[in-house]
Image (cartoon, rainbow over all chains, first blue to last red; front, side, top):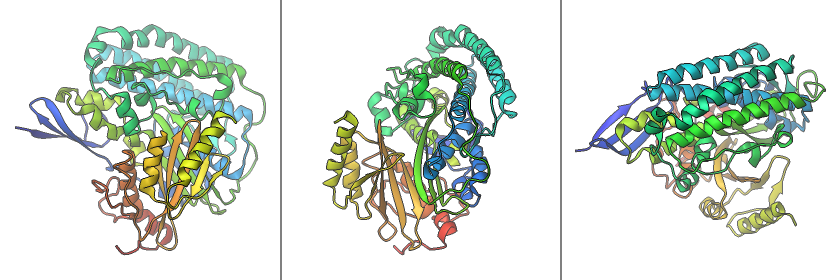
Length: 359
Length: 148
């Protein structure tokens, strides 16, 4: 006889509040129903009650992990509306921060994934690495979570010692290559727990419209860094990472290999860091009437910002589409037919961010 | 003609055949179409056939109580934003044609009280239980949604 288990909103695999109702026949999942919205903060509405400068600060609070990409994308949308050309040095610094943020996010996720599968040694090693990235971000920006680097027209801070940052990032690359990549690709504790679990086929990935590492792990070669090249990516070149298997392990492997590509991008951008100003203008920006859309590749996938201005001092509309908003519904496709015991791991493999989803 | 120009022309020609479609305008960020009377179900089917992915749906409150709804599609390297308007506070659901529309329409229902006839489950998604449907629209304009 089928039975239903509510998992969440206080969740065994995640610290954020969302709920999954799983209907099972014996140990096999028959139906999945996801409930979000426990923490809706109305950030889009609040942004319409802040001036343009305050809106950037507010939008950084959408997420505590990928905060920088949110302000980067918001600023880009505003800059398109206002026709602002961002100086090259600021474009490179934005790209460097986005890639460091991706390394932080992927390491955070990898550590948690190790914890969920009961591989505590790997969890400790990954979180030690993550701490080094956090220290680096703190040294560069003054902050560990909300870096406050972006402003409309450019960035707030310069990178003072690029050579020292390169040294640190190269040391992190060595640790990723030596410890993390071999563990996630070849360690039997990992492969036996993840291979063949929670498969999302390429056709399903396209049908559900998933983005980011979840899509790439199902063989869909989509990445905004190459699809709609922006920032310094067209100068630096970009190698997309995909896997055909579509299972939990493929999602792990894609993120592990993306860490190396992000390290390469950071190093290359720092070596080529152009000279010049940090912002296109001084003072308070005046945003003329208009609307625009901007996309960026957040750690979890494509983030979309729509911004409209009526010429006033506050945005007329800010719309945020986060990657988790389209990745979380696809849990249904990944989970039905799976063993109940695999449900937390499958959910974690999506790297769902409820803070982003609920906004 | 480059492959991008060819794709753009193909898209324009295919969309032009949909009832209510208008010309595509090219802006700095992407392509845009403003079509208040667009047959959204036909549009969604055509975009599927063309291989475009629905990334998001945006609502913008109008002072007459109607909502401008923007469908954000992409198929790299092209992205197109298709604007239409609710009719009496409603638009046909495209959730059964494009899966990503399911949550997007539920969110639009929460924030702007847009009704989507044909949606398989237009239950609240993000709306806090103490608020009513359309709390974004009410806060932005103070204008209630048209009566059903």
